[in-house]
Length: 119
Image (tube, rainbow, N blue to C red; front, top):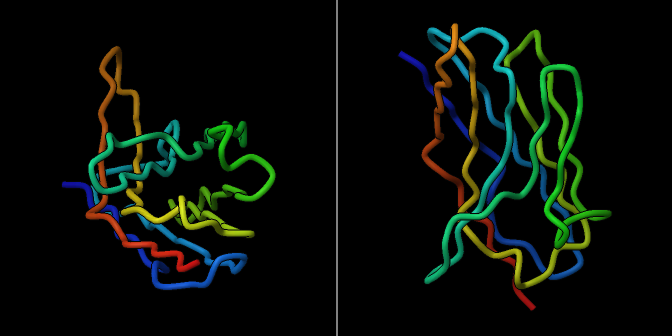
């Protein structure tokens, strides 16, 4: 069994910063990719940022230059540093991990953490 546990969400004023953390535990070792997705009320879940085991990152255009994703492979932990937050960043943020076993991809999700940016 695999668990992803997120922390670090909360309420912040526009222009402020938050740091999200997500630790993967259980039957999972060094996921090929870890990342963050978000879902605002009435909208579909969207990609925020991902990072591979080798450190290759990918960002949504709306967060480039403001958010930074990083990971500690030894701890199976991924972080999302969010700066210059805007009201449109308000959403539930979900941690994601992907592993490849043979030819099968396995996807895991955290329970989500609320980020609210007040204007």
